Length: 318
Ligand SMILES: O=C(O)[C@H](O)COP(=O)(O)O
Image (tube, rainbow, N blue to C red; front, side):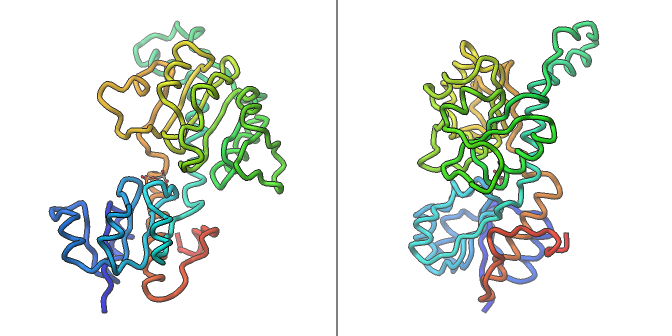
């Protein structure tokens, strides 16, 4: 029997073609409402990206579900506990976007710390002479505090070292095999010149950077968030930018995406915010989608999916 896969969001073209070649594909982003689909169809697999919610209601509506796949890394939109309790396999793509997110974090860091955006805007406006005003600073010699030393955090650490930064980190589970110094969170916040977030959004990390913790930042510090908006109390962040120690905020994520029309953070002169594009580079997007789809097909065929800790582009022929 041909298995049925429900796509909650689009995937890269060749991953989509691979699915169509092997299974029956239904989409929740077409004409047919999701409620109708789950009521009338037998769904064996659900594939989502960052928006489609795989919650208890969806799981309950799909009694034949065998596997949920997150085409990406963050699992905050998937009720992993409920799925696992039902014996449904949850697959994501750990490490798949580590290189590109790390590059994005470094880009935001460089743009902010060097005041690049303002300088470019001035030149575009025909004003070369304001150059002293937009000189910025350099990363070399600065201390980078990484929150979360997983696949992405470690990659950022390596790039930052190459830029001559001193790397310290905080993680719920410090990694004894790395050479970077692990610090208590409060100590790191007070010490780092630049802080970069690389944590998943979980009940433990929700609003981790609250008003009290933001108040600990070193005067003139910069904060980078390419992980999840919910890690930061954004109102407290605004206050820190307006009155506090924070010199700048660079992010690819916000707690509400897209932000409300009257959102102040994304328009603030000290922020530089991109629209959750970190994983959307042509290479990573395709790789992540192919990896996920191949894993789903392997699982539906009754075989073990690729080990979750291994992300291997060579094995995928990419
Ligand atoms: O968790 C992830 O993999 C990234 O945030 C990318 O999310 P996206 O699939 O919504 O682009």
